Image (cartoon, rainbow, N blue to C red; front, side):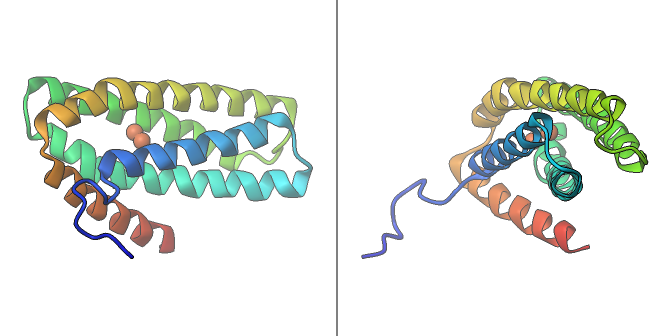
Length: 157
Ligand SMILES: [Fe+2]
Ligand SMILES: [Fe+2]
């Protein structure tokens, strides 16, 4: 029988962010392990779409909320937003490159992976700790639903 009343049974914002982070890490692993040209192009464009939609929805539904809380959460959100900018800049450079799969391109991809993994570690460490401190369970569930809705909307654009 389907249970509907268990508290915390809905994926909250932090569960959803973590799930996306794991998906992105898997895509980087595939790309950096080496793929044929066709799979590389398809996997990179999947990675790009996932990163951009995740980042934009996260800025709106997570960082937007942290900016309004207190000094610590505000500064965390400002720093994380700068990192999103660095990731987006490098992502654009890799997207615009005519030589996907070359050594130069792969070197850029490895740096992007390091940046993203560093960002995820801080987000799931400091960022999630702050979120658990300042947001109620109900807020996290509501923000999770808003995040998913926003991300799906962005993936369709
Ligand atoms: Fe994230
Ligand atoms: Fe982020």
